[in-house]
Image (tube, rainbow, N blue to C red; front, side, top):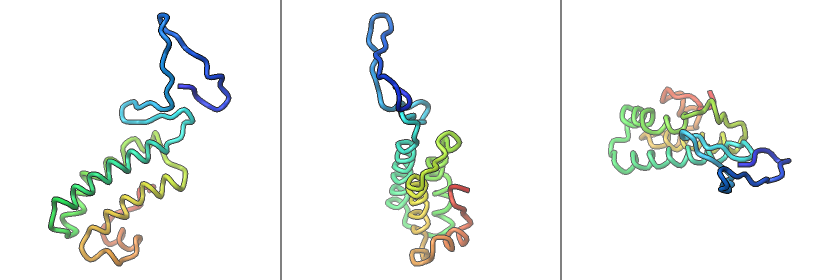
Length: 131
């Protein structure tokens, strides 16, 4: 992987074997890109969280606060919070993308579809992901 913008894209060899050049690398679930941006990490975290949220929506009929919130906290939120110290999204689009998963999860609770997002968070005892 060539880091930064001003590199010469040199070829590297190890034991007379050319090393493959990649644009991003996954290590322990953290995706590092050559430009050191966390866009791919945020999109992968949101994708996994959305899959879990869809599984909850398909398999649980009871949409009460007592059912959805513990499921969200145990199955969905860990995907969003994993390695947040490493990636720490600072672009508004990444923050909005990840926060959209929680916004969608709060709408799963019965009677919360028409309530403002900030009010839903207060009523459900949750806080924004950036906090």
